[in-house]
Image 1 (tube, rainbow, N blue to C red):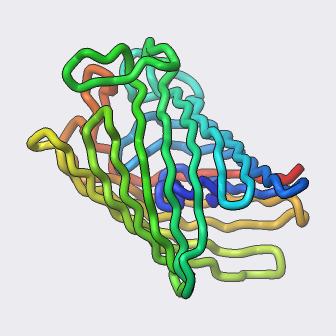
Image 2: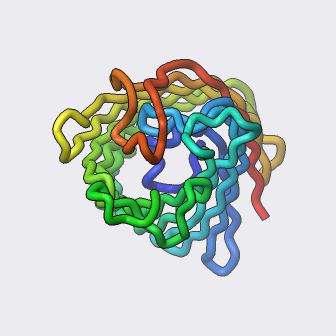
Length: 256
């Protein structure tokens, strides 16, 4: 998935989709509709079968958008009842020269199912009102074979620092078809002792351009972590467990 969420250039391996852009008077619009048999984020499973729509607006180097996870049925893994998520983000990206580009921004993670108001944030000392968190990010990417990139993230509510690197490559199969591969590996550092963990993901997708303005993609993914049980997310909020394994996804994209 591209999503054009620059901060998800690496995270995209956990929820693969597709996006397109339409331009009117310099304003770009990207849309995505994905379907995933599991929703895994940084090696932790938050839900099983889910629909994941997204929309983004951009102007010059500035961008902002929304990404949703909408579980299907009652098979989500997050406690009472969990699984629904709305992420709002904004950022700025640009060129540094000689093939290098940068990306900086902020994401607001919200979880409507967890009895939180939209502005209720989580605090580890128990003073917070809900489960929502704020995270800033910064990344570098190189226009080179395998498109290497590295991102760093700081979540102020969970007091975690994450560094993640990724690579990707697209192989043309036919005039309108490509085989897209990607991989990432990351490490979460928790300010609390014992909360650090390693995670990774890989994806393989077959993409088909239906028209110049619409495309389809389908593929398989593998991801997980070395978490022995639970997660860096407080179990009172999200009853997650170690969740390494395979899953699959579909996506459709269109420009308007």
